[in-house]
Image (cartoon, rainbow, N blue to C red):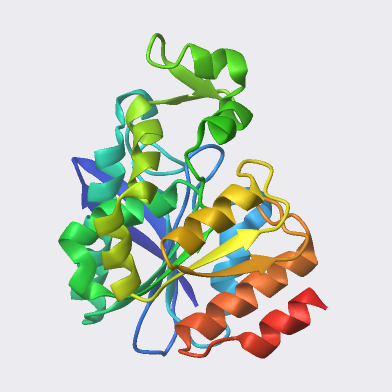
Length: 258
């Protein structure tokens, strides 16, 4: 069963959909920024939630402030607003469902939002899965915004895909280089899932980042940033399920690569 969800955060009403399951620990999907909401590009988040729900998990996919159906003018939304949204959402579900722990699955810039929220909710987090994290290197920023927009960064508002973006979201990328936050994430069983054909982050830089920080990671064959390839998408869902089930997913991972 899918039910409607609302939570209040920073004076805004957040709206989402809750896929009701029977397992003890719920899953919360945290979206990225550009062109992302609780549905996801080509229904990425909906399909992920449906897949995990059919395995018994309660899964929430929610729009953060200024995105999708949630309140807030995106021109007034800063990165900390989304961090507050995650904390408020988790606390609301904890009370409503009488649960103490959560699995977090974050996509793109949502990975930085999760890292920043750990200061407040780390004791409530069972596992963390990062999907297609945007690695904040100059090369990747130029690929994301374009050379002209990147060179004018800090001098005028940032627009991408027709959407305004406060520069605090861009600065937040540096959190992926924060050793202390990454160590905290690894205490919560952090695993990163890299698409092998991510058009926004160079694979070599992504893998180097994971290795330097001793982070467990998987490469998803033929996947792009939003996993438009259905085979890679199914592989991603299956590996995330294995991870939150407490299994290593080795055999499934090998099957994905064959």
